[in-house]
Image (cartoon, rainbow over all chains, first blue to last red; front, side, top):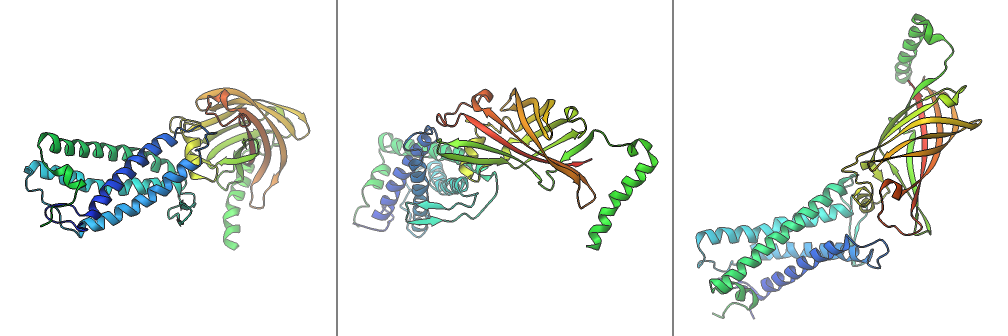
Amino acid sequence: MLMRDTINGYGTVSRVFHWLSAIAIIALFALGWWMVELPYYSPYRNSAPDLHRSAGIVLLIGIIARFLWRISSVKPSDADLTPFERRSVRLVHWGFYPLLLALSVSGYLIATPDGRPIDVFGIFTVPSVIQQPGLEDAAGWAHWGLAYGVMALAALHTAAALKHHFIDKKDILTRMWSGPPRA
Amino acid sequence: MMRRRTLNSIPLALTASLALMSPWVALPASAADYVIDTKNAHASINFKIPHLGYSFLIGRFDKFSGAFSYDEKNPGASKVSVEVDTTSLNSNHAERDKHLRSADFLDAAKFPKATFVSKSVTSSAAGQATIAGDLTLHGITKPVMIEARFIGGGNDPWGGFRQGFAGTTKLVLADFGMTHDLGPAAKEVELDLHVEGVRK
């Protein structure tokens, strides 16, 4: 089992990062979409947003770690793609990082402009840094728009991966699932 | 100290010279106009709503402006109008404030102003009055009655003249189109108003 990426494929760390963040991003979107409509007397009215805030902070930490891993790793070859595909792939892949960073920051700014910290699973807290009345409204709109933006990018990413797999018959999807061939 | 005294003496001197020049100003004051002292925040608009029926949530609107006219000899001739910035709602919890400003409640993006304009003032006892007027909130105008009480009035230490009142009223949220369900105990909200006016 190869931990690090090679020119031929993704190592275990990158693949675990990829699928865990995929699950976390989709689950956080679904949770956020569901929880904002919960009635006042729902038993999940407090616990669902607590879980969303906690998991969001964990995702942010994971995304930063993943980014550091990515820039310090070899990039598997995309030589069999057309120049247009290569440009699009880079835009989509690198686009996730600033979008997810902005999404996390906007979520953090909904919860903290009154000085309250974010409690992460009761283990640690992230303190409030910016205190500004009304900031939560702008942050809320940004969080909403960015969440849909990330989902749109994820849909594009998924559609492209499926196209490469089923139509172009390339190993793009399978190499994110199974490790690179041993040299 | 000297600086402040000098500054304060300017409006005083102005008023005195105006009074000398224009005899009608020197007549015994009857109804006078007051601006609500939001500049130095000696006025507040607070709301109070039951939480589950177990306690009360207190919040406020941080930004508003208004004016009133008041004649202590004829309180029935008084008038008051207030405009509230609904986006300035503050319940000391950002996420809750965001929800209360959202379309579930105030829809402050669409209705950024709430107004109250008095129509009649009926004094029932010394220092007490019922102010009937129109409240426009969430885009809906309804008559409301404010039970008002005179607190005090007179010269302030800085060359001005002030009158202060307190008032309460109760609103049914659904009357103003706010139907988001907060439970059976929280259908009504009380407004607790404190207003100090500086004579213009």
